[in-house]
Length: 56
Image (cartoon, rainbow, N blue to C red; front, side, top):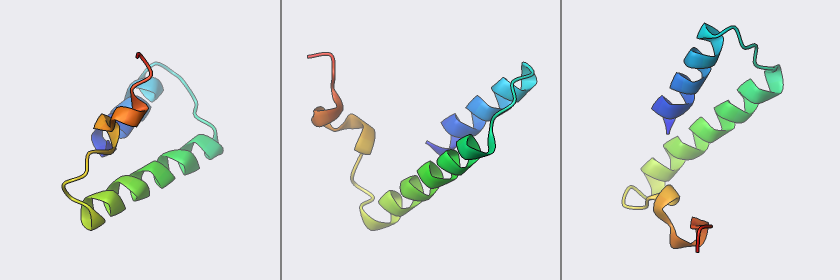
């Protein structure tokens, strides 16, 4: 998750996009969440949870 978010910011800035401060704070919270999930429940894969599957 961390790598995806940082790549997204890097690519956006490389194309001249400016991200507002609030977006940076949101990314920071996602990174904290990802870090704590890995520490507290390393076997859990948040993004593979069947409740998130919106295609069915």
